Amino acid sequence: MLIGKVTGNIASTIKHPVYEAQKLLTVDILTPSRIPTGESVVAIDSVDAGVGDLVLVTQEGRSAMAIVGKTEVPVRTAIVAIIDKIEIPPS
Image 1: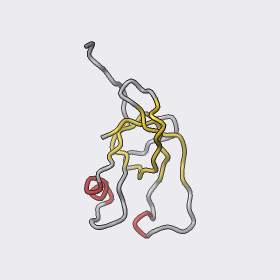
Image 2: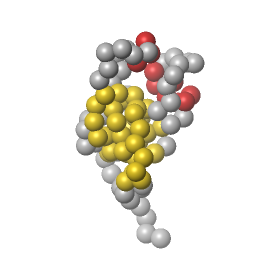
Image 3: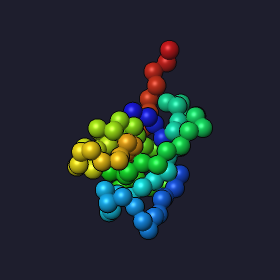
Image 4: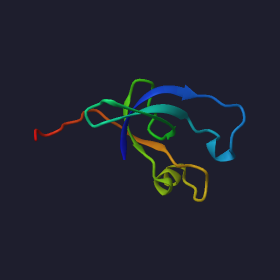
């Protein structure tokens, strides 16, 4: 699981059938301290996230496929939660 910040929406007129009726978002990956890693991904939104939201992202194909409700489809990355708060205990 990764922490990310939603930065935008993806719109497409032609797409694989599994992506029909699915919202796709761009997500910048962050460290637990909310520092950008420089990596960004496109993810299926399963929690109605929006631009600016802090989210939890899975990049495990089977987990992402379970969110879509199908197996053996071209899905790898999905937003699985909107993060309200991150607490990091002092070291």
